[in-house]
Image (cartoon, rainbow, N blue to C red):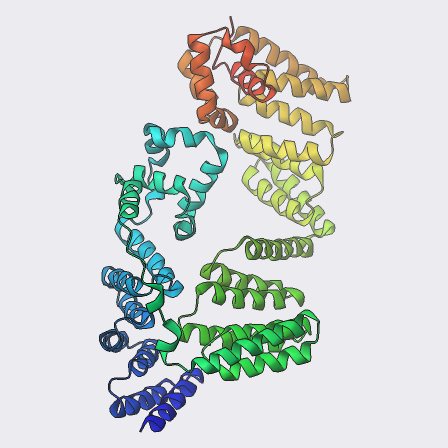
Length: 542
């Protein structure tokens, strides 16, 4: 009977690997009739039911597995995974925790617990970083106020605000736990310390026998590992054919491990057989999913597919699989590769669109509409001309003129800066920039720009008159403090300075102790910011 049970189990395993889920369930069920106390059979059938989408049955088989063999970690993984699919996250968490009591070092259980903790946090609190008064809360609490002066902390907060799913990878950062404590109003760090005070007693080393207890052909797994080692040695020597034979033998000995398949894929990658590489990676991912493989291994297989497409310069496909890899597990290497592929795609798209002749046509259309006073249509054609020829400085100058007519002075200013960057000798870039600054009532900066225009052409009437106007406006200025503040806070540069906690501290110190100004002015970065606030009239030096 034992032989017949093993045969049915192996047939079930092969059917599951081949995607014949119903056949696998039949084989496992027949085996269970012959050996109803075999925990491995219930575990395998639970995996089959989960793959089929019958999560309640998967849960029942997982529960039966734990009932028959309560000290086996995989049984708890099966049961907890089914509970997750059923959206019963609290029960899933308890199941993972119960499993870890029996196998504290089981990585699959640890990963499962971490994932379900994140799901529970998302379910309970949604995204605490999306709070409309996020920075106000952090500023008001002394625990996070000091952190706000660190640019890397602000960058981290913005990343979590835009992508809360990254929270799982940052829970080890004490700043994240402190921030969550502030945002959620609960003492998460205190809870952690309390748990650390009463750790679960380690299991006796002599009684821990995980491999023999699994009854899943450990001898074959040992042989598979030896084959893998031989394959690795051959791979290092670039003896790829020999490596391939050993990896194939390992995969046959242990068909439940995706590692040997990804190793095979690595060989095909080195041999530039990218179609085979991708085919094997897809199969590895399927095996990994069936056997609840570590998500990092799944991510690695997706990344290898992405790399194969990258090698073939199929960057769109590469980005697709890099993103799949990053969804499983974010690593700096894959993220960098994905960004590199995205940049190549964008650059290629922009380069393919460039056509100076069409740009000239669009520019002429823009000029026609500008002459008619239809500035929105003129701007539309100038924008298209810029896409067609992004290195033509005059196009930016023309669009800046449209923005100025439409009273969009900040946008005009940006276009003028791009114009000057592309052609530092183009006079109109400076005069139009000066006009934009003048409209924003930033007369001090406008005068500097008009002065540069006069250096290019001392006879420029536009620059000379602009400089004189700004000089008179600066002299006759009599704005109320409220008007000064309102105008100044409309400037993005001023907004950035005033939102910097370090600068606000310096300004408070200057109010209490005017002598402190001389010390701060020794720092060129701070001096530049203070000069900006003086220029816009927010502070005055007496």
